[in-house]
Image (cartoon, rainbow, N blue to C red; front, side):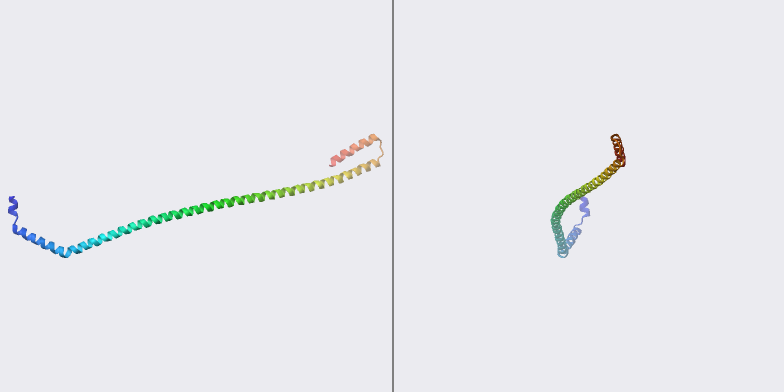
Length: 166
């Protein structure tokens, strides 16, 4: 305590107290209101920015839901179009198959008709050949007078000759 009593001067403490009060009241009168106004405006600006951020968050959330709904509609539309395309493809494939079957059936019928025509031509040609050969045989038999054994032998020779030609 002795130290404080020796080093503390009551006059200096009083002057410093008065100087402090003068500075305090001067600052209070001239600087306190502008400082509080700056702090208040800053606080209001922060609150407005927070409100703007919250508003943007809600707008973002609504935009996100709208975007998801739009994507879902697009996916549904594309799915429907894909199904339609698949159905169209199947329909076209069926039509192509039916057309190919009809064409192959027509081709088969035409080939069958051609074969029948060729068969008829061959039969006609064969009849002509048989007629010619019969005439040739008859002609040879008439030219040669022979006994029945020779006729049989000659007929067999002629038949073998005809078989060689065929």
